[in-house]
Length: 90
Image 1 (cartoon, rainbow, N blue to C red):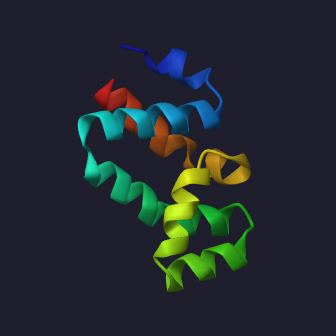
Image 2: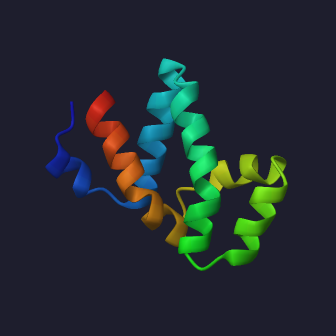
């Protein structure tokens, strides 16, 4: 089990990948759904307002965003979300 200090050292991309992999392995649909519904706000916080508005209007773009939620500014905004999940479930 990785401790919080070890997890804090990881990049946001690595946190995303670990959290999603763990959730998929455990069939944690609740986490994956929370991730999907958190992405529009993360897009807005990262300055991607157009993406945020599109995500709110359409579900399918959220699936694409889920795949890329470990990239760039969005990953940084979602970092606490990944840390919380990994600390609770690793």
